[in-house]
Length: 266
Image (tube, rainbow, N blue to C red; front, side):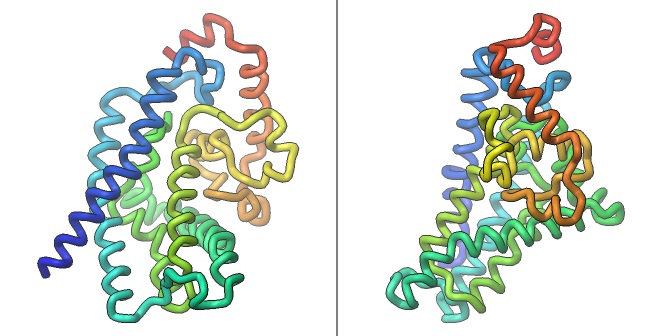
C-alpha cells in the first residue's frame, strides 16, 4: 500500500513539474512577456482570459493531475504483474515494431480523441463533463489542462487495452506523451504560430492553434486533436477555418493592426 501511495505521489508531482510547468511557462511567454510584440498573432480579438478564468483552470488542473497519476499507477501496477506488453529493450521485438510504435500510437490517439470528443458533445453528456472545458472561450496554455476530472481519463483510456494487447516500446509511448503535451499547448495557445504557407502544404493536414480555437468559439466542429482527416471524412470541419487562418496570417504579415483592433484585445 505504501509503495502505491509513493508511486502516486511521484506521478502527481512529476505531472505538476512537467506538464503543469510547461503550460505555465507557455502562458507567461505568450500571454505576458510577448503579448505586445505578438499582438497581431492573436486569434481572438474580442476576448481576453482574466485572472478568474486562470485561477479556475489551475484549480481544475490539480484534479486532472490526480486522475492522471492514478491512471499511471494502475498501468504501472499491471506491468509489474506482467499484464502489459510495454518493453524497454528495442531488441525484445523486431526493431520495426518499436520504430513504428510512435506513428501508430499517434493515429490511435487521434482516432480515439475524435470519437470520444464528439461523444462528449452529446447534450446528455456535455453538461455533466465537457462543459467545464468549454467555459474557457478565450483559450490559453493553461486551458489545455483544465477539464472535468473524468475527461482526461476518458480521452486516454485507450492506452490500457493497447498496453495489454500490443507490444509498446516505452520510448515510443513517452514520445507520444511529449508530442501530445506540446500539441495540446499549441492548440490552446491563443496565438497562431504556424506560417502562412502551412495549410497549403502537406503539413496542413495537422491541426493548428486556430483550428482548435474555432472549436471553442463555434462549439461544434473541428473535433480532431492532431490531424484534420477525421473531421474532413465525417464532414465536421468548420468551413470558415481556412478563411480565419488566412486572415490572421494577413495581420501577421502587416506587422500589426489598427489601434481600434488593439483596443479590442487589451
